[in-house]
Amino acid sequence: MTNFDRRSFLIRTVAMTSSLPFSIVRGQTTPVRVRRNVNELAVDDPIILSYKKAVEVMKARPANDPTSWIAQADIHRKLCPHSNWFFLPWHRSYLAWFEDICREAIGDESFALPYWDWTHDPQVPKHFWGDDNPLYHRRAITPHGVISDEFVGENVIKGRILATRDFEVFAGLKSTTQRAPSGAGILEGTPHNRVHTGVGGDMATSMSPLDPIFWLHHANVDRNWSIWNNLGNANTSDRAWLNASFTNNFVNRLAQPQSPRVSDLISTEHLGYRYDSSPSQPQNMPLAGLLLVPENQMVTLTNEDSAIPKAPFELALRPNSVLRGSIAQMAANFALPERQATEAIRLRLSEIEMPQDKLVTVRVFLNCNYLSVDTPLNSPSYVGSFCFFGLDHGGVVDGHGHDGEDSSQLSFVFDITKTITLLKRSGEFTDASVITVQLLVIPGTGAGTPLKVGKVTIEAASASG
Ligand code: C2O
Image 1 (cartoon, rainbow, N blue to C red):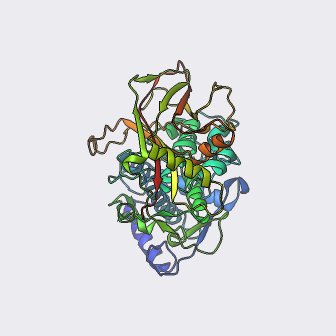
Image 2 (cartoon, protein in one colour; image 1 turned 90 degrees about the vertical axis):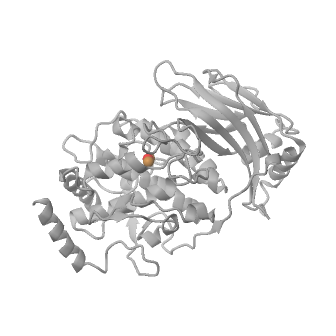
Image 3 (cartoon, rainbow, N blue to C red; image 1 turned 120 degrees about the vertical axis):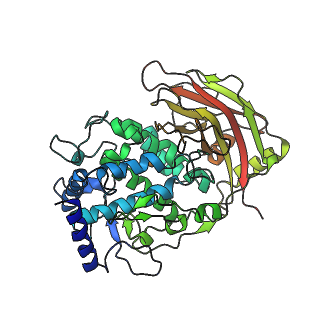
């Protein structure tokens, strides 16, 4: 069929099924499709067969067709935001429009993408292997290779990532530009990044959507966002987030440009889908103000030694009495049932240069006097681990940096309220007059290039008023 034929066929199809397709019109009844766990589907389940067919149809389209496989991946290379608070809504919309293109490609309006739950199945699912399989793609990982627990296991996902109440720690730091890397939240900086580089091949690059597993990986990232909301955690009400729009970033099944606003993207039901693991009743997504950090609730240390070697690296921060008081109070309140989600102690690591060894692991600890590569991750001193996703754009749009920010520098943010509480209880942290931040850099491949971290900040963030 020529492209022209396909389009005219398509318009007729759409006209006939106009009550069904994806809709972002508020108040309109939209069928809510269910995204299912791929590991609960047989290799020949109709959903898998549909996805295979969609991939084949899209791959057969010419690259200048915006609904082709290559053109869809190229949207990611050119526009995807990472390391800021647009990461989650942008990828949610990207998947929703891709899913709509899949439905048109296979002529099945009920199709929904499955998701890859790497927490419980850390291997690339069996459906994605085999030479003649359209879902196969060349990867660095093998069919039996696993993504490390340190990044995707229950302890980190449930125990730390879903446990933070702080929107910016969960989702990424505020940014006023789509691609300025203000700081990666823990969902992005920990499991998301490691799944990309751990799978390897195109998945480790900005053309990662060329690998059919990309879409199931991001469905699971998106699912974790919806789980976090369903736990009662609020997205921000900040207008700079809600009113931002991704102008002409996506296309629908007719190849027409789409410019969703973030406020259109906060409910999955509103977009016409939900996850099999989530409640079937649409939730009212709570919104809350951003937590704010007054100057006197912050202590920052600039790292004069530019490079952190493999050995543990330490920086001792000395909070003033105001910050010490807030830290003591937050730690004391932490376990109380009446604790509000209106405060958090944050640790920000910034001005980090993308290392050459992109498989490097950085473990973050506080006040640990027995730190080594063998220190267990259940130590009360352990804050979390982060890693890099080797995007080659480095946060630059069309070759220009933003807001005076050096686009080659990255930031990561953690919620250390729980770590400090645990340390206080175990007596390893008494008066908060010195907080020692320790980074353990574990090389991924080869010799392990040194990591450069320019700034370390501890801050008490709380709701104003
Ligand atoms: Cu924009 Cu997981 O990538």
